[in-house]
Length: 332
Image 1: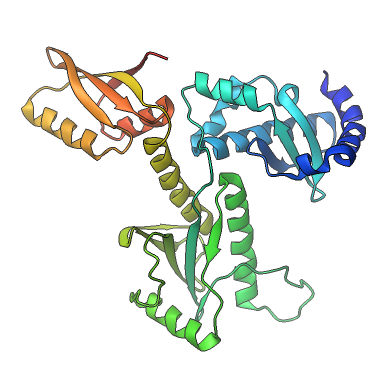
Image 2: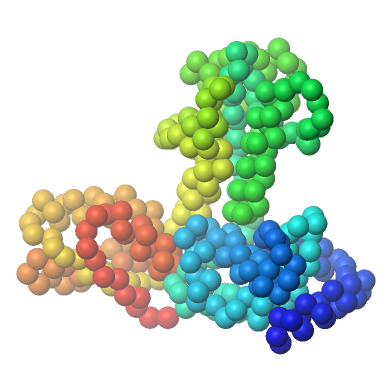
């Protein structure tokens, strides 16, 4: 159906659908996505649908690069089940689940199924007095005084909300308690003591520290996983959630789903030292379940790999080894 006709029909049809089956439409759907609607004309709706499809692919695969797979699909307007305007300037669209799954499978992509773990985020802001960031409501723009905390909270809230929706990951923040306790804990965390953090070591917790007027793009982050602090990086708040989500998605892809078999041709592997380095690299990859040498010729090796990871994220993992390789899927 041409988009111009769809534009005329959808508002009336959607109203009837909402009236007859509002519960089904209101439910959260893994294959529903939203995107900015900057122009309500045909071209604007088409662009927003393409954007919504790209955001959907990022969320369901757990991979940011999956947005490039939009090119593998028919026009988004031809695979949308229904769409509507929300929040005044956004488009919400639900796409054909069976088709999305089929195209992703053909592209070697996995789907991040099931309930997702949440990310716990503590952020200490230092404006002379340390305090914890928590999401804030709208700030009155007519106020005559500039409240540093309100300005920062609004910017961070918007960034975190957008990233959370894009990646389909929930965020928990530092708990609200009395001001004195919060202040003492923020002081400790700012100076590097983490004893006031909760003992729930199974939480996936990221701790950020930023000084004002330092740029909010240069927040220092640490990550605690299974009770251990694992890494430190500098980024804005949105990128911190992206990084945490990337880790969680990669872990899911490495441990869930059917076992798949691949042949990996690696060259050159010129000597025993290079072979040992390759072995150590493969042992570090969560995406590689088992592997064995299938054949050798000259300085080339053929490896038989089993993995629970779909082909595209497996390729990404193998690329970190820093050696040229070719990968081919065995069987269905």
